[in-house]
Image (cartoon, rainbow, N blue to C red; front, top):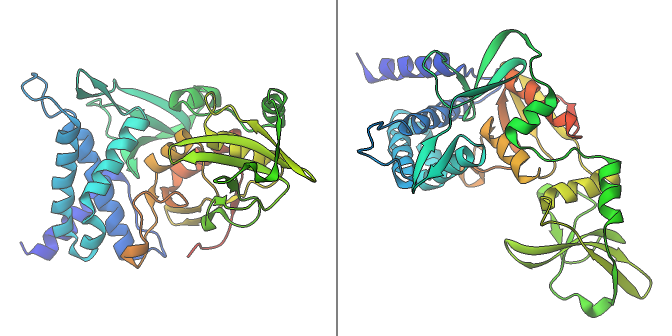
Length: 345
C-alpha cells in the first residue's frame, strides 16, 4: 500500500474516532493541524496510563517527552504543516499545562496521576475527565466529550460551573460589593512613574495596557510581570485617587471584566458556524480558569503565515459545533455575550 493511501486511511480514522470534520471554508492545512493536535493530545492522555505496576513513574518529563515524540511523527505524516508542529517544546508544555489547569491530571509524590473517571452533562453533550473502558469519547481541541442521544438535564449550570471551578458571574451587585469594600487614597499626579493603565477604548487585540490613561477612571497596575498590584484609578482636577483591588481573593481579569462589564465596555465575542465547526473571535481575556477551559475544548485558529500562528492564541479559536453551543450557554450564564456573524476570515 502506498504512502498516500496510508495517510488517507490514518486521516479518516482520526476524524471518525475523534469526530473532527473539515469546515466548508476551512483550509486543508488547518484541518490537518487540528487532526494532528487532537491525536497528539489523545496520546498524551494515554501516556498517563503507561505503567500500572509502579516500575515507571509518569513524570512531567515523561509526559512531555511522549508528546514531543508524537508531534515529530505527525510532522512526518502531515509534512505540509511540519513548520507549525516543529515548535514541539511549546506544544508539549501547552498541552501539559492545559491538562493540569483543567483537572485532567494531578501531582502525587513527584509523579503524575490521571484523575478518576467522571462525566458532567450539559444539553446534548457530556464533558469527560479520566478514563473508562466502556466510554469512547470524542475530542474538541484536547477536551473529551460524548454526544448524548437526548438533552441532558441531570445537572444544573451551577453544578457544571463547580465541576470546572469557574469564577463568579459578572453582575452589578458583585461589582458594587467590590467597590464598597475599597479604601481610596489621594496622591499628586507625579506619584505614578511605572504604572500601566487598562485600555477602555479600542480593541484589546491592540494591547491591554497603556502608558497613559485614556479615561478619567480605569484599572491601573504597578509592578513586575507576574507580581502586579491592581488599583481602581480615578483622575481628579489636581490629583488622583487609588484603591487597591482585592486580587488576593479574585482573579485580576475577573475584576477587570467586572469593571468593563459594569461600564458597558466589555466587548462581545463573535462566532460563525462553518459546517461542524465554529470559529470564535474573543475580544478580551477571560479569567484564568475560563480562559484555560476555552483552550481545552478548542483549537488555535490557523494562520497562513507560520510566524503569525500561536499555539496559545487567546483571541481566535475553533470549536466542534456541539461543544461550542454547550460552552457558549455556560459562559452566557457567567455574564459574557456572544453574537453570530458571517464567515470569520
